[in-house]
Length: 58
Image (cartoon, rainbow, N blue to C red):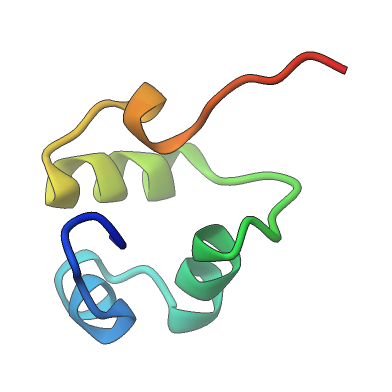
């Protein structure tokens, strides 16, 4: 969202994902995320999951 300079309300409007959830994702404050949320984000942002998340081993 930051790279595309999108406002959270724009993403909320087009994806149906709550503002609270989007804010937590944006600021990396999530422990889990629903697959339907990932699907909606990837469809809206026209990206792949690995464009959103990076795996960092413990």
